[in-house]
Length: 178
Image (cartoon, rainbow, N blue to C red; front, top):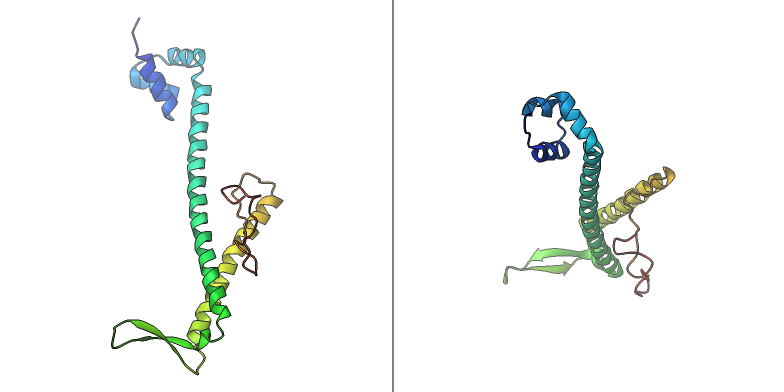
């Protein structure tokens, strides 16, 4: 009776998608011997379990990466919103232009009597972009909820402060914003 390295063969079967027939051929083992060994030690069930765990770990890693990326984006959006708020509070904001200071080589702000339409357009575009990002997130969340898919990543938009500047209560949200 031939001696086979069953630990090696089992490990290869569990860690790959190779069929029992291919493994039997590769190691010169009769297929019926391979099948009875695999059945006796539950290789197929263990392989499915290992593959499911691998898929779950990959999904968790992707989800964590997405959460970190979305958190970074939302942080940037909060900063942008604060800049926009500050800019909109400045009555002369749209009557200012950046000019190069020939003496220092730096850049400074200069007030003009002409409306700076470029700055107005940039501000409008920034507001529209923030609105579209939040809107897309809310739409995706709505579709997931309608589909009954609670396992999908969701984004909750939580203002960090109200209009008076008072910090918002975010105690009901976990560390990922949900």
